[in-house]
Length: 477
Image 1: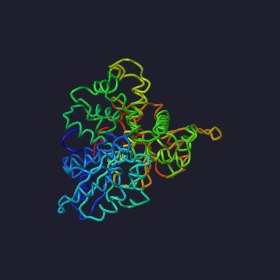
Image 2 (image 1 turned 120 degrees about the vertical axis):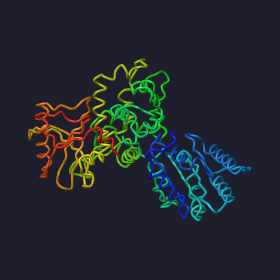
Image 3 (image 1 turned 30 degrees about the vertical axis):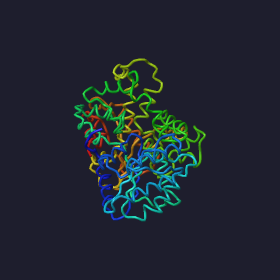
Image 4 (image 1 turned 60 degrees about the vertical axis):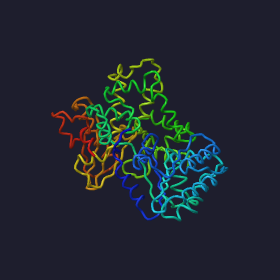
């Protein structure tokens, strides 16, 4: 990755505050794998720590404890006693840190902490003893813990009901870059792609810094996709399995849900998911919550209800791309993307992905509409056909309900040029607006907003468009 941090100013400010505070600080940093947690800490501290250790995936506690003691030896430059338990290891860490000057904060960085908590290792109990019995009683310790297993960080540390309850002093979550940040990142890498290509890039890699770092910006986007996904030994061909297995225990259960959501592009309710998978109760709730925490799934309220009827949509661009083009692709074509990028299947995928880009950039859409300071609620609507009432089924993927009694029904259209509204489409829009008013019984003002790449073609049908947002608006900070 590059020398200058992109879009992590708030996180850096928080780290600086913790470093300068007059108390010991317990900082946790969560976020999906490949999002740049380690990079942020390494760059902020310039790789200078009083102690650092990286947890190892699927490695026994005995081996990790041995490696932990080696790390203490490396930092202290002194031989260390043999440690049998995590209690022994943290005691040795205390002894080493007490030899350091008392006039500055001692920075301890433990990366991938969830992987250290192996079965029957008592890691969390030992960590509690270390922090409550020693670190928290001082004023000069800064313990930083990161983990891609966001659910573990939330359950075992943040929401701990035991000795670590309410001990976290700073909680940071790293999300993927938005379009503005992605463009800034790529420009720093001397990328000359236009915004249309960067938008397409975002539809695949979703603003995940590690994936963006793999791009060769002197090549076209299509060449990069071929190299990273379809070439022999492609770098990201096996990324999907590695990603989910690293993030979740019982990864197969999580994968079954994201696969189900990938097959239902407009999303599913919790009841739909339970019926299709046989999962239910608190177990299903926990899985959905963990997928939300990792930014893989987004829950959209159903218009008119904050809780009932919420729609869960798969919004991780990499996962959607994998299921659409990688999982079942048996073609031995190393230039598959270049040869198929104009196909109908790719065009359909781009249309869906653009909708998800818009949902992820609802703040930019609000700003473009001039309502950034107006209270709003983002929701969706899905209505089944009712033959008794002679009402067809319909759905609206993005609704912006304003506190000043105006409701934007958003149409999101991805195209290579300005979008043309036909006679039939105008009729469909008017019909759907009427059906929405009838189904919801709302008395608020309904308007149609188009979000497109290059705008809507001027003409007799444009009169139905109340307001427009273009691709360039989505790229604003």
